Length: 404
Image (tube, rainbow, N blue to C red; front, side, top):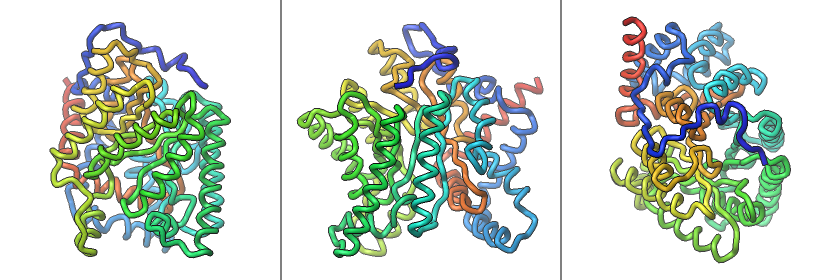
């Protein structure tokens, strides 16, 4: 198992109380030039235009397919803001900059919407390359993948509904074998592996696989993490249920806690198919369950390791305060904070400054293939209450501070 050395402990704090402030823009943007900040300010302002957010990715995709000369523009703007590069090698420089500031990178092969057996095999191979990169380089503390990147969406849906045909059952077994091969590769190489959450109507089968992998590989240490989307009304109950199962069967749990990424799609499908929405009725309910889940994981820290995937300052402060209050070392490997690259630098770098374990999701892949991911980032920024405004205000504050 890799232990934190070098840059991971350079900012370690001996303060007895958490004094985290997420308003320190000098720390947040120290790695950004004035030009980069001005470009980010412009980009976030674009997210206020609903037409561009809704249709921009599709129009860009068409333009790229027609070989119109826009690839350079895309790569130097939205791609540069939210992605590390088109390959693992292109991500190295970005990851080095983050690591010098005490922040790790989670290589995320963000190719979406492409299916086919050859594609799944290639994706699995690429995911294993990210695992090997994490083994070689301390700057990559986790690996991550989506199950639908290595298996057909419909096969997870039918498995979740127990409606697999005989032929589909064979396909699903092949998919599960591919998933376990990824998990086994991570464990054998001493790399923590995050399994991302997906839509509710395929999540049951993903949860079953994740639990099986945790039971098999998390006997003494936590290598495999599942993801809980706390904007779902049932996830707090699910967390408590799995705690009981893990305790009875004698294995450990790893959970990445997030609020969620498919809210509009989930509500639309529930309305279309006339079933109760699985999504919380309001943001306050999501925030409440997220913080309850965080607290529950912390209270069971002897058997649960937690990766806090959030851009919420209050939740980040809550975990930092819990750790400080209970005397948990800031660099305890059972606790990590994670944010998306290009967002919430005020959280990431101020936490790292105090010595906490922090990592950025660093998406990569060919520009054409990651456009769906970039589209979701744009939509999330436009729909998350206050996110664009917060990013803009922080950037403006830092530019003013530098000018002064």
